[in-house]
Figure 1 (cartoon, rainbow, N blue to C red):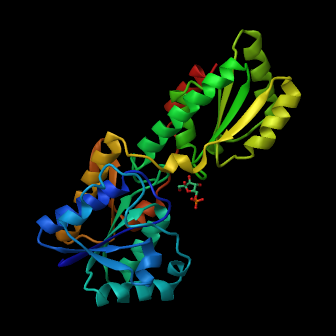
Figure 2 (tube, protein in one colour; figure 1 turned 135 degrees about the horizontal axis):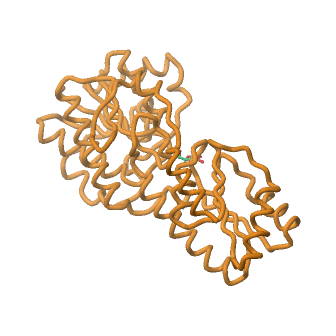
Figure 3 (cartoon, helix red, strand yellow; figure 1 turned 90 degrees about the horizontal axis):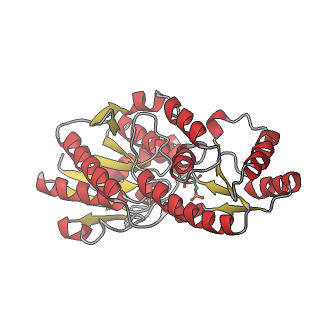
Length: 320
Ligand code: F6P
């Protein structure tokens, strides 16, 4: 491998900059040239490609977002787009590429590999919804950001003796919701994975907790369920307790990465370059059972992930 390309794709996640920095500096140390591909696969197709050296990634480790920019790209879902992407890599001398993103981005990497470009995926998403890995870049920061915001909502919720529904991101996965539910001591956690939602049970629970003297009622609602505002209206009507909805939204994707996101992202970026340099391709870096490992992308994309049953039990016991 002589020249390594690096791109971030899909939703940004705090820690992506740390991963890019690690890719660049590890590659330079291994004697490779590095090209930064801006705006994900969309930028690849537009040839928005810049030279990167060890100094180009100074002062980004602590910053949220991705300095390479990111995008979602429809054209790259087509075979013509994928072939064009591989051709552009060849034109720029890129013989290996590190793709930092989620499952959709790994599908793109898989296709690039099938058209002759060596690829390694690094899991970057706040949603934690990549089956092969117990860690994804950005989840830790996003949960901490959401947790702090929810603490604040809780203050005002208690002062006004209200019920608060707080909607957190995660697309169709409930990891952020479950973690915040436990970290914030929520009274109810609504998760898309085990959703057999009966609003009457929720209403009964709110009335019961008010009777035993609770002055607030925090409900964490996962984005995959959504409809928090209409839910708040119905709950207020059914319980007679003032209810407000707060949708945390994109603030969960920003902010300076936590120490964990900086360190794990750095390790994964370095791991990805080592994998390319040692001749690997079509692999994804993962953190599994306490170790950094890599899997075949095809196998990784076939894997299924479930919420940890014990974590779910704990969340239910504690949410009284
Ligand atoms: O995948 C990360 C994520 O933030 C999801 O939690 C959310 O559903 C989605 O991206 C939002 O995407 P966009 O920024 O394109 O609205």
